[in-house]
Image 1 (cartoon, helix red, strand yellow):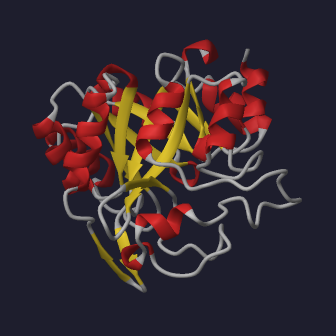
Image 2 (tube, helix red, strand yellow; image 1 turned 180 degrees about the vertical axis):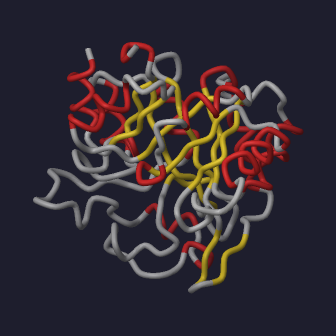
Length: 255
């Protein structure tokens, strides 16, 4: 059963290399993974960039909110500036196109479309769903991609623009209370109505009955972010369809 589980390198393997960089994705391609996962946002002037945080301070040598920063400035930053233990050479923030060109024909790619964020206020980058779909169409990678988001209502827009694309709703403790009455059925019915193929849940929300229930709604189940061999093994035989890890070297334990 474990061999059927899709093995996904989270941000390319965020504990092994500077996250969401070409260095991380190149390293992941040499590991026992089936897919890489990445985060997509937009610069102020409309370029699709692969970056997780709303602000650049944690990961780079720059300052500011993605909403306020032009592509040229973002490309001048070193995305490996604060990697624990250091990194041999600077890493630029990549574009989505660069990553697609790198992984095409080699692995699947899970693309998380991020919301914009300023303080506690969340929003949506204008035209981001259309732009992501167009990049996948241009790269001829529709069958190789899954588009996921915490912004569930963006996912039908992705499907409307390209019905061939698989989409997935991400679920965390912030947006779902598993103790609420009929919570699971309500959740799964909503995901199905949004046209999703996947439900991608935080590891802390996993329940033993979840794989069978998700499958009964015609959906597939992914679990993130799993960073121990023991837990990967447990989940791999539980009936889940995908596992995401910051330490994709651990996937060798599932062979």
